[in-house]
Length: 409
Image 1: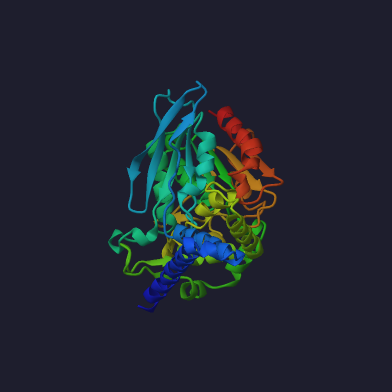
Image 2 (image 1 turned 90 degrees about the vertical axis):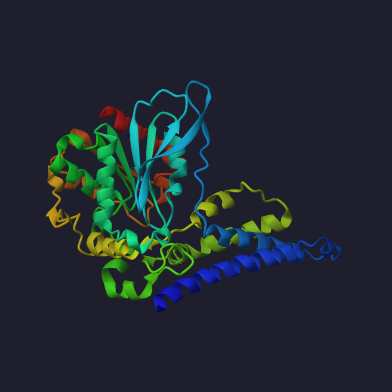
């Protein structure tokens, strides 16, 4: 029960801060306040506006916001998001471009389950959808999943990917971004082992911990030096009565957000201070870069406790995938069975979460894949997010990914 109270305590803090921000904004924006020419009143209203917006975003799932695109035929085409497979813990969705001939390549974007919604890949989808059929793994917030739906760990995640790839067929190209990279590798190996004609055409792994020990970071060192009991006691809570998943053990999104922001606390503090100043001076707008970034960054989701703990234990501590010892339902999944899939790795030279070397370890692991079907790229100036969003992705990485996919179609 105490873990449930802890969950409700953090939610109460979030709710209270949203209310305080709204109250400050409303009180300082009363027309009568303009009688007093005091700049501090404008700052209070600005602080309230930014605070209310920030804490409100923490409890809401962002929209994809992809309503139409302009294709190479020069026409605007509406985009529908269709669910192809519906599951308790996630859906397979397709961005269907209406009125367009089927695109020449099919891509499955495997979104991370690491605190943020799959909409984190919005800009990635936007950059690929022009000339590709895009499918995305849309994971659900664990707080909204009733306990009656059972558990969900990294084996379950891998099994979801296996089902998705089977459904999409052997002409699918899989791009796994960040956390799911090792599990996408396992899913591919499982299909190679069970039925070779169901494997994907290509597998692109981006900034994921295939072998965390290949290039240790503060995150990997912390994970290795702390036992699982510590994580169970400090970060695992039970969902409170407000949500459908009441009683489910989770690693709450709010706690994850605190961890994310503490890694670059000074940078985030300056960003919010600058935004408050812009609002107070009347130079801010709804579509500021600050709002675009933090509307997504602050929108966090809970992950199941068993998924988080099994990730720490099996991926980081035991290095089961790095040592080719991963099992699903007790059966060894042999990475050596991958031989016909083109494998590419992408890493950021400035990635402080999954440092260069961790993801490219997959190239060595896939020893039965011919050299002509393997390629590794390090984008020197890219950080963790820069490998799938922003300038580095659009100008350097995306063209290489498309070229790799097309050369192995």
